[in-house]
Image (tube, rainbow over all chains, first blue to last red; front, side, top):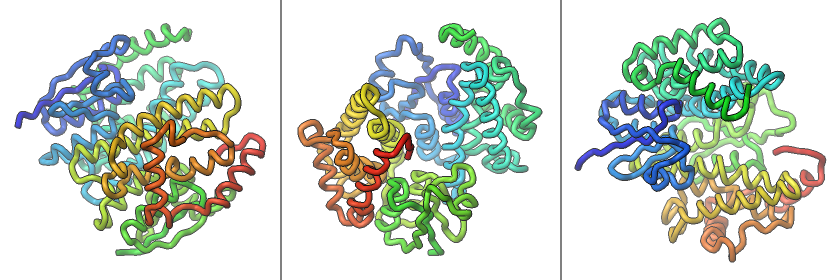
Length: 219
Length: 220
């Protein structure tokens, strides 16, 4: 049976990056298709009619939507190497809890650091740093959230690292002095090819954010 | 297989999800009812991040977030599985659980707590999402097939709380005319024994909604 894998994605999307990293960790060969989100392809609309969003992983013609669902699917469908979730049910529950935490906090609050001003911005910056600090406590002195090797939470969180420069520059704040352990973790992750090859350059992300700010009418 | 405790709340659909799963698998547990207006030191200790129910304690180790707990329960107690075995079907179950939690339920709550134009908008949105969910059900008895699965458990707000909310507000969202398949599912759902035995007392829930609706700006 041919193993045909297509990923419908959009280059700056941290959600798409998660799936890229998971596929790379598993050594899966796939076709990457970058979508123009202002002009979505018929395939995207067909494969994700409910949300019409990327990423969509298409495995032998069957779509898996929602990045966390897709990453877990990749982990389970290609279970011969590089497990992303631990085998112990309690550890798995902790990993899922923190992945859910990242999903609830990082993207939305991160967005406020480049899309808001004044008091709203100040509140967002504080909330963002507080969330990162909680993640730092969870990381502890492990090299990765997954322990000695990259795991589910690492895959779910690291894509936002290439957005940090944009957050910091637009929001006028610096993350490293507040969260040195997390930045050290991020740099350690970037040493891994599966991650560095999956994340775009932070300058390009920043330019993309500037364009979005302009489109949204934010000065 | 170890000591199981559940920090929950009698009226919380999230808390009841966990009870349904535990009962479905025949797992004995101690229920600790939390007063959400006055959270116990135990709750704050075991869920410092969100400070919410439910929290499952298995041999003293806490797990929070209802769907995370459901996955844990299915992996720990193998009787009567609630998740499908095959990775693709499992991915679909996770997708629909997310859809219910991120789209259907918030739209339903928005109807209850909003008024006038905002409420009309919320009703429109809820109808769209519930139609999508109904299409997924098709001709199956339950989302899980012949027996209840995780999606049925996660859909408990729609299965039971919604009926009570409709009575408390006088709003008719899910009717047999508008949602024939979903209405059928609701009937099957509340007659299914493991579900029936894990629902809050209807009158008590109705009273709670009515009093909250009459109180000034309150959010669940």
